[in-house]
Length: 164
Image (cartoon, rainbow, N blue to C red; front, top):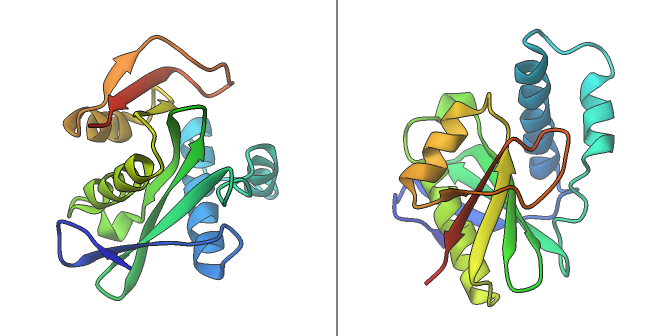
């Protein structure tokens, strides 16, 4: 386990099929579906979204998944996908009860440390326009908007942070 800047936040690597990761990734995708459609999810929508955008590649050698605990509580996750010389950030999620107390910062710090250790010189990500809190989080932590580098149905804003 890695202790982050906030002593109450602990982050660790986790396989995407671990029960903790399954819970967090399902909650993440539920929130993405609900926010995208602006209504409660319908039966099967989250399962379809999980199948359309799987997280099973967030494991070695193609990537990694980090889970965060706030105290004893399972509180969030973030993933990286390895690219040639850089890493793509994905699946950043903090449970609602743990938002606003440093979880996003803890997750970003943990993935940045892992990316640096793996030799990545930058982290990139894409996100949707409606995820204004996520965009604000990235900007606060040194991610700058860049021209689009990917094409996807949900990619509307692209960010990058150079790692030192």
